[in-house]
Length: 234
Image (cartoon, rainbow, N blue to C red):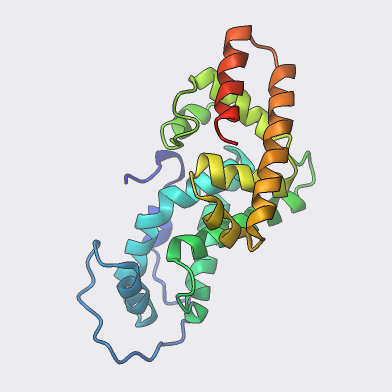
């Protein structure tokens, strides 16, 4: 998957990683040659062994996903770029304690959600920023999901504005389930909440979204399109 144009962190990757102290992992198995197509486990072992290319490959593999998650939580704001970079910095620092009990994608997404929640809590201004910006067009093509694919750009923008009215915990469930397209089980794992909690939060969030959508200016046809897509997500 191509990197997201609006939030490239290639310049950051060009900086030496020597400033990061990763404890070496003792492993009895041979680490295969590091290539971009190597499995996550091999790239993790390579990173822990000091191979900077291995970490670069991990970032390139998951960058678009993390950008999508952070953008879903924060909106296309100036906070996204810094937050995405910090997610990967924290990921790099935490790899020494990674034991493979979850996938790398789940591990990274949990860091992204938690960091995004930190940013939301720390904002001095309004908690939720507007999705209306020139950057939206750049992000649109990188936010596909089965639930949202049939909604026209204008309807997606209205849905996003509605998402911004949700509380952080309900917003996290909507972002993971509807924007990232993760399963209920994966969402529960990332948020570290029971399966039933994800279902109840999603149901409540979708109800709130439908109410908000009805209050936003739009013609009846557009409202029906958005609401039908939300109904199909329950």
